Structures are given as structure tokens and as C-alpha cells.
Length: 330
Length: 288
Image (cartoon, rainbow over all chains, first blue to last red; front, side, top):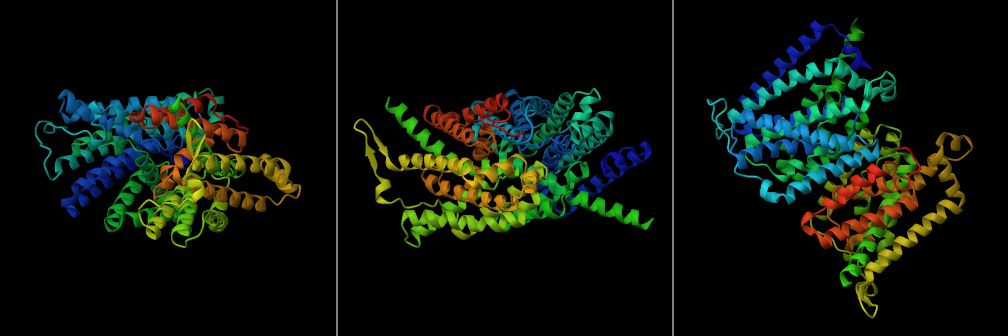
């Protein structure tokens, strides 16, 4: 309900919120750049994963579809961008990103058509089956995808003909941040548009939305395609920055981890998705450097704690706490 | 002909092991409406305990099974009281995350306690050989697995259809508040069914260790398979689960024999087709 009330705020305040968001993202990325100048590859990977988590948020947080197969869309974008570069010689990064987005959107259309046929547990199972199916296809079509060795031989031109993708990953990082900002602004507009409101209506009460005369299935399918495009951009960014696409970008594990990140941050909010990704991946980097299995135990415990004590996630709980404080102060 | 027979035997054994493990999941899912992704983790705990009992304590196969089943059920009861009881009736996403969290914890702890290597469970002499049928020799263990599956199916059928506990269980499944109003102690029914379900998982984990080898990632690797089996069978339906497991076992084994290079492609393709055709599962009674 609070989400719905937030969106009835006047337009000026909403665009102010977007501007603050942009400022925060830029500030965080500049701080990241100077704090970890030798670890820009990790930061770029975080940005790419952030796009995946944002795209899950679109269908899970805004439409209420629980999915454990969203890496299929991310991987489709990564392979789309990688294959045109490695096999067709299209090495212009903007074109590659665009192709990644289109590939992701197509994968979103296909998996949306399959997954949205069921509800509840069967839906979850369908989403798992879809990501496994994509994985097996990519593994089998090894002449195109490199199979289990991964797709290598991806080359990229200089960005806009000016900035080479350097060894330090500076260009890739800046490019990733710019992509993230563009996607963020577009998604802010999307979730506050009448269509975004309709999607939230579907999550709250699909029967009522159907009774009002809107097609629930078509809203969710359109959201799935948009979400696919976002995930595809993330995949393309990953392919461009690492110059290799592995089968793990289509894996069930990635899907599950991305969902965990979303819930850790808080569903139904773009900030929650981003906060969750950064905290999860930073924490993972620190702990798994020590011992990967302890990492698994800690993530598990963390998940249980979040579900029990902060079901709205880090960002959601913090926002609720702040608004309570503000409400109490008045 | 030889190939067909080996496929049939392997598929039957695999399907039965799947059934023994996932029937518990099916019952709890039908009863408590919990999407329990940690079910495979309990099967894995059973496998580890049996392996520890046979290899390190030097016990026989039968006591090892007994220890594994009872100890896993004992481990599970506090988990049910402390964690699961809070997510009954919660949205699926919450349940999925909580149970994935439990699975991750179990994997981490199992690896810490037992190491990352494959664990074997020593088979007794009577089960490790093969039976000669005249035209074909069949591994005794396969037959043992099949018999176990049949016994479990029969036992559960008797428990649910013919005993007083079964009546309470079915009443709680159909309408928990009404059953409680009529004097059924639903909390107790939940706890007992959960313990039985987990015990069956552990039993399946031990019996099926030859087919589904015990290692730390067991819980994650087969979790999807168990979930798929329950979803296809329809939560809470014993015949549905049996048919689903035999069908999935047949598809998976045939795929592995005839087209190994496609991996699990046909398995998941079949899953999508079946779930699309029967959204409530083959024997589904419940809206999930």
C-alpha cells in the first residue's frame, strides 16, 4: 500500500527523487572508482549484476511473479552480444549492447510465454526448467557458443571511436555506470507510468485488474519483455567488459543468487535492487576470498535472518524506519 | 533388447528413489503449503549420517539406515518448530528464500564437517552382488531400491487411508481451521508429518546413494529434481507422485542412455510440456 501512496506524489517531487537517485549513483560510482582502482573489474561485474537484479525486480517486485530462472535473459543478452562480435565481426560496443538488449527481450518473450502459463509452485518449476533448457541449448550449440569452454574471441572497438577498452577496465566501468544511469531513469519513468501502476495492481489483486477490463496476462508479458531487455543490457555489458561469456551466465545458481540479492535489498523498489546487489557482492568478495564454503553458510544464515526479521529487505526496512521516525516527529 | 532392459531397470530404480525422497516433500507441501527447497538437504543429511555410521562406526547397513532416518528426523523437528512454523501461509517468495537459506547452511556445514569429497555407503554382501535372471543379470541394489519404493508407497497408502492418524491428516489437508475446530491437534499433525517426511527423505538419501551420490552440493543439485517431481505429481497426491517419479525417471534415464550429449535437455523440455498440460499436476487435488 505504501508503494501505491508514494506514486500519487506530485510529479515535481517524483522527478526530484529521480535526480537524487542519479546523484547518489554517480557519487557511489566515483567513490568506488577511487576506493578500488585496482578492482574495477569487480565493480563492473557488480553493475552488470545490478541490471539483472533490477530486471528481476520488474517482474517479481512489481508484478509478483516469483522466478528462479531469470539468468536465462541475462545469458541471452551476453551470448547475443558475444556471438555477433565473435562470429559476425560486429564489434561496435553500442551496437553490441543494443543487440544484447534485443536478445534479452526475445528471451524474455519466450520465457514469459512459458512461465506465465502457470501460477505458484508450477510457475517456479517452469522458470527453473526454462533456465536449464537455455543452459543445455547453449551447451549443445558449442559451435556458436563455445559450449562448456565458454565463448571467447570477443573483440570490441573503442567506445564512440574515442575510448579504448583498456586493461584496467576503466572504460568498461564508466560505460557500465552510464548504462546503469540510463536504465535507471527509464525504469523510474516506467514504474511511475500508468503501465507501471497497472503492473502493481496486478501484483496486489489480479482478479480486480481483470474485472476492470485490463488484460493481466498481457501486462505481465510486456513487463517480461522489458525486463528481458534490461537483463540483456546487463549481459551485454558483462560480455563487453570481460570479453568472454561462460555457461555460468545461464545458470540456475546465478538466477537464485540474483533473487537473493533482490530480496536482501528489498523487492518492489529500484533502490532496493541496487543496494542488495552491492551489499551481497561486496560481502561475497570479502568472505569467499577467505573460504567459499563459509560464504555459503553465512549467506544461508543471512537469508534466514532477512526473511524472519527484515522481510522488506535492507532498503525497505530502512525506508520504513525513516518514514516512521518522520511520522513520529510530526 | 539388452539396452531396453537396462534402461527399464535403471529407470525404475531411479524413479523409485526419486519417489521415496520426494513423497515426503509432496505430503508436506500439500499439508502445510510450504515450498520446501531444503528437502534435498535432509536427504543429504541422511546419506552423510549413514556413511558415517557404516565407515567410521563400522555398523551394518540396516542399523545405519535406522540411525540415519531417526537422527535426521530428530534434527528436523526443532528446525520445523523454530523456522518453518513462521513461514506457513507466507508468500511463496518468502518460503523459497528461507528454505534456500537453510539449504545453503546445510551445504556449508556438511562440507565443514565431512569435507568436499564423495561419500560412499558400504553395501552389505547380500546387496552388492547381482541376481541372474537366466538371460540377464541385474544388480541386487537396483531391485532393493525398487522394493523400498513399493514398500514406502504401500505403507504411506495404508497410513493415510486406513489409520486414525491418516483421517486427521486428510482433514487437516482439506481444511485446517475446520479440522482444528473439530478437535484435531493440527500442530501435532504438522510436526509428525514433517518428521515422517524428513525421515523418508533420509531413507531415500541412503537407499539412493548409489544413484544420487552423496556430496555437499547434493542438496542443491537434486533440489530442482525433487521439486519438479512434486510439481508434476501434484502436491499431496501419492499416486500422482508415484506416476510422476516413474515418468521422470524414465525420461531422464532414457535421455542419458540414448542422447547423453544433450544432457538434461529432454528432461526439462518434458517438464515444461507436462506442467503446461497439467498445471495442477498429474494427480493434483489442490490449487497451489
